[in-house]
Image 1 (cartoon, protein in one colour):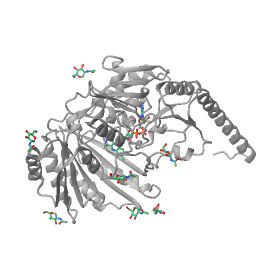
Image 2 (cartoon, protein in one colour):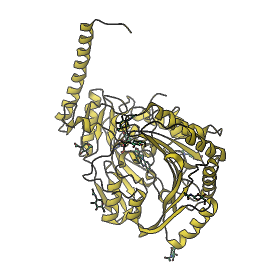
Image 3 (tube, helix red, strand yellow):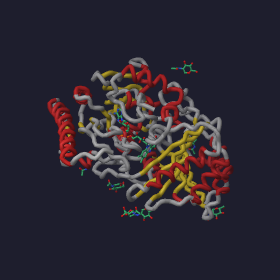
Image 4 (spheres, protein in one colour):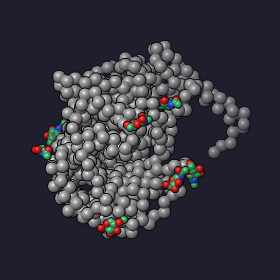
Length: 495
Ligand SMILES: Cc1cc2nc3c(=O)[nH]c(=O)nc-3n(C[C@H](O)[C@H](O)[C@H](O)COP(=O)(O)OP(=O)(O)OC[C@H]3O[C@@H](n4cnc5c(N)ncnc54)[C@H](O)[C@@H]3O)c2cc1C
Ligand SMILES: *[C@@H]1O[C@H](CO)[C@@H](O)[C@H](O)[C@H]1NC(C)=O
Ligand SMILES: *[C@@H]1O[C@H](CO)[C@@H](O)[C@H](O)[C@H]1NC(C)=O
Ligand SMILES: *[C@@H]1O[C@H](CO)[C@@H](O)[C@H](O)[C@H]1NC(C)=O
Ligand SMILES: *[C@@H]1O[C@H](CO)[C@@H](O)[C@H](O)[C@H]1NC(C)=O
Ligand SMILES: *[C@@H]1O[C@H](CO)[C@@H](O)[C@H](O)[C@H]1NC(C)=O
Ligand SMILES: *[C@@H]1O[C@H](CO)[C@@H](O)[C@H](O)[C@H]1NC(C)=O
Ligand SMILES: *[C@@H]1O[C@H](CO)[C@@H](O)[C@H](O)[C@H]1NC(C)=O
């Protein structure tokens, strides 16, 4: 690198700083002139306002704007276009790589913290809901006010806006579908500022595209979605297999048996296997949409296949209690509770029903985590989520019916490493090692799930979107030719 004289460096620095603050001042004043609520780098709560759930990533926006209605979003987008600033919507801020903050410095972030309303229409059992609502508050409002329910994730702080943009899976999804499958229509602010409606009959191409890749096509300001009658009760269950010896053979035997069994599992069962730190415990947990009479034979066939667990929990639970329990017992309401944070890196693999995981892959996985050294201040878990199998509603939809393509997939597996200090450089290699232990044993293409956004994923276009990518890319070029919403791993972004 050329060494510049100190005064020159200082001048250069000042020039850059001035140019930066000039851009910011103009977009910020444009936002103020439009009567919008704005945070900029001089705001006292700027640090807090820009800190994402995953503190491993921290982008510095040009400004954050807090709309109260679609026309505010439109005005914010127009300011950004005028000042050539990229725009990114932010709902719950729980993206795995802080993508809501723009995936780069200098974006205009459109936060939905003031747009969290929900209204229910008993005439057709639909809700109109704004994207800023958190999933916990959403489930609670649906149930306590209207005795309704939907299929979605249950981590209370996750925002609806991001979750429904890329799939949205929960324990009732095998019965009711992914969250995208429950959408009837949406209101969208486009790159040119137009506010449009999308549905099966209005702008159907965009309706297709936002159900799996929403953030590339605009900012959704409202969804219309179908709801279900909340069940009076469900059967909560948890079966723990505890092996103090951490034998790879035993680990693989339980997982293989579970995998075989789940190929024909009834849609009423929502189930995951969690493998916690060290891999001594394999926890099968979830709930069954039905009563004990119906569940008992299902449990019997599952445990007949896997062998008896060391601990067994089976209880009839009211719907909302089942959601709370499935979330580890914490409250669903996020009102007034400080935002949690984590420091982590995660990867996902979608596993096809036609080519399930090989027994040797399970063995190799267990061999890896029982022998690899774990970095300081680091812990990990793996989750095998059952999406397909049997008569699952997720798989009943064709892979090209929505932007989310992996409809024939049996499992989505998630490999998650977290640190309670600063991120250890070996942490990334450890998580990669878990994944490579599985993929290295079988020659096949695994996909990935865009809601478990992995910023280091190679060939993300194919992994997330498979055969749907070319069509998605074409629609993106038509609706946002100048790339207002462009950011890393958004449709249209460079390889
Ligand atoms: C603790 C935890 C638990 C999770 N559990 C599950 C689970 O059970 N099932 C599951 O499927 N996923 C789960 N996820 C993943 C989760 O679905 C995604 O991280 C989701 O994208 C987060 O949404 P958000 O609104 O909180 O994030 P944000 O960071 O606000 O947004 C994520 C992305 O969506 C875009 N976006 C947000 N709002 C809009 C909008 N209004 N219009 C257009 N684009 C928008 C953003 O620009 C960004 O690209 C979990 C994540 C965490 C951290
Ligand atoms: C920090 O920001 C979050 C998200 O915008 C907000 O909910 C919270 O109230 C803020 N906390 C403080 C102390 O300002
Ligand atoms: C259990 O649910 C089934 C319907 O799935 C119903 O036919 C049966 O009567 C119920 N049994 C009990 C004991 O409630
Ligand atoms: C769990 O059960 C298995 C098989 O029955 C047994 O080998 C193992 O020791 C048990 N684990 C504990 C912690 O008791
Ligand atoms: C969480 O829920 C419990 C039980 O419903 C309640 O007693 C407690 O006050 C709640 N805590 C917060 C912070 O809302
Ligand atoms: C951090 O995590 C490590 C590993 O899980 C644990 O041993 C340690 O007690 C934790 N430290 C703090 C301060 O929480
Ligand atoms: C989806 O695939 C089916 C079957 O291959 C085909 O008939 C249909 O035209 C496809 N639809 C779209 C929108 O590509
Ligand atoms: C572990 O985390 C603690 C608490 O955050 C921190 O003080 C310590 O420096 C960390 N240790 C390492 C080796 O990163």
